[in-house]
Length: 395
Ligand code: AMP
Image (cartoon, rainbow, N blue to C red):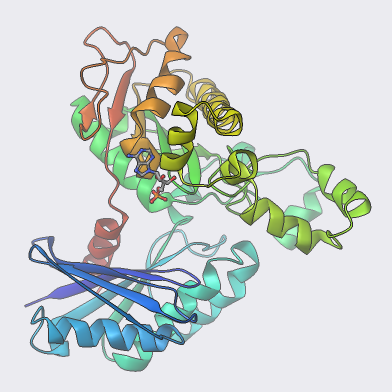
């Protein structure tokens, strides 16, 4: 019995999914939230059942212990020896990791050293890795990098127009993110298009709390909207996305509570984007409800998001010199009929036309009309499956 766990560790959360491999059957999944705070919430779903408990979990090691105990407690596994692989999502792999890799002590140190490229994410990913190594030291663990899929970007796309030495000496370049998602949905899109992957050109729009748009030519990433860090691109749930960099020193000079660059970056990461404009929430469901109720701030946030998405999608039509399909994925991309409608209805010049009977909640696949020259696809992403498959490939 070969079972693989895919782990996505955030700073205060740990999401997991347990697979039977190579069958790729999901045996159980869950999330531990509020790690390090009081009243952590542990949720486990398996075989149509859902178990939830609230307890204090001080750190990731304790979270992993609880997760593994839960697997035994609920009879999902009979013994830890059934777990033969653990795959960890890691956000930043820098220029070092162009593919997934078996985690050694050296790899773990490199992941920690890359924290400056993803300060919110890499330390949490490393904490998850260490917690599993502590408890299951014999089990192969694999790191799957969000950046690896974008390693194929050409230099014209990944370089910033800064003095060369900043790239050569400091590795300042575009790395991108959400790679496993763009990888997965671009492959599923080729199947839906009925074309060999090598002959497809698609624009993938991962629109969730974090947002990134990618241009994918023949299955390879050639450009993407996230940059040196996951702060770049269209506006996101709480992240500003691209802004004029001159705003940063201006804010430090003129806003009392912002003392230094770290203060401003914190605002750009956590208090901006949809939240900054709508104010009531970063959650698109609440913002859409606000739009319905005539709330002006929510309406502006919705319209600004649509505007930013359209501009990036338009850019990538240019980068690819035309595309076969636009692919929507992640929380908003998969579920928000209104965002898809607003985005696509403003891009009809590019040859896309939505079928209103298919652009409905719960439908996935081709949502464009038969006459639509460029197809519009909804593909539920599955980053955990990509992680589990990479563990299987490398262990
Ligand atoms: P993710 O980061 O991929 O989990 O996506 C989270 C985002 O998806 C949040 O902004 C949610 O509000 C949004 N979302 C989830 N379901 C819906 C829905 N039915 N309609 C609109 N937005 C949704």
